Image (cartoon, rainbow, N blue to C red):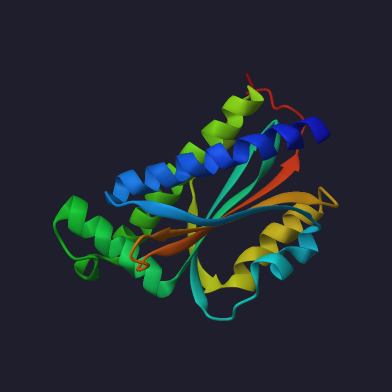
Length: 194
């Protein structure tokens, strides 16, 4: 596990940059990485690090597995999720997201999560020289503790400590802000690993 953690720690900044580049390309705007921190934490302490806001948020959650496993979580407050959708719909569909059905909005957020997860996790997999598979992201609207608690419980059943990467991205003008949180635990190499 120590060797895996060292490799992941070293590659995580490149992985975050890949995710930022992918989001910048989707939005055709420069996204800045505001902060990035790595912590070894007990799963039950995660909210101490990321906060426990009780306002509604949008979470895009993807589970990954392979030689390492864990979760990738994108967090938006409602206003910033709407700003993201507005930019996406205007740029790529020449329409307003407000006219779209909720299922289309959810699919758009899911696709953003899919693109970010793919870019982030491919860098981690390349660094490990192993395959890291991930699930199609789920989009959930809830309070932060309600979104994070099931992830923490699942992680606590496997590990006493997990590697948590917490990042904060922002458009240069500040009207779009999101957090990318990566929770890593070890795993035995899966049969699909190369």
